[in-house]
Image (cartoon, rainbow, N blue to C red; front, side):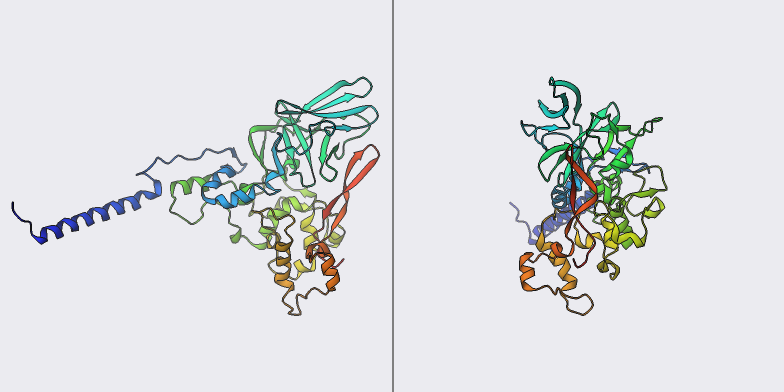
Length: 411
């Protein structure tokens, strides 16, 4: 047998190396569309915004942003609306806590029928059922309470009974009369605008509370703050090696006012609308082009604590003396930070621990600090009772809802 020369072995290994390099190049060249491994399947929209852009649904964010998604779904924003079920409805369906006495004549009972939840109204005199309404949608995370909506065909109405977290009980829904079983209250787009990412109105004649059930995006989710993201998701599925975020709103690219406007849409109280269509504003727009506040600069310190965090914050010295402070200076919308004293203290002390003569430092006595558990927020942004938001816990009792003020000051 003829003995092969050393050069033959060298040529053999050199040839193998060339083949491997070619394969690596082909894999890299085609990795962006995964053509060697799988077929790219685009995501279909779960809803389409008025501007024509599609919503992909926050569940699609899991593929690239799993950690952020897992913390965001625990926030009050994300839980602000949901389909009603035993997990999302906070009130009890177990006697005797499942009932609410509206007045001397009428009692409500909340009933669970094989997982379907109902609000039933009975005459006390003979226990006769006089109405039955199904829980279809929850409104509110349950931090302070929840209201509930029902579908009648394609129209949404509010139920008369609400859940109040402070005393863990069912109560009369705010604004409903206590002397009678009231007619259903229609729910318009403006009501949903601050509790949902999107709801498609069907614009029926003389019926402003009709919606397309298949075009609802529940909760304040990723796409409410970053814009409808169908194009973003499909682009990055097709181009997984492209790490520059495309077709999505990046808050780092926005101005201070644009970032504030994204929050002010729902956290600046009642606004006078310039546009008839809710949900038309998207993050990055200028809010005053769509609606203007119903108060002036002179009124800021007199604003009620319910629903106007932006107005109260903008009246604070911390805000006025800063060129950069906005809502996310203190709040991370991706996490549930409620009750996280350490986190909020660090936010305050990042400015007020400098002792530079400009920001100032805490001058409270050590005894006062200890009494407040060294909680900056408790002293400088206390919980106060709302003057406008009151819950009727019984026929003759109105309880103001406690809300943390965002007017930062010395109390």
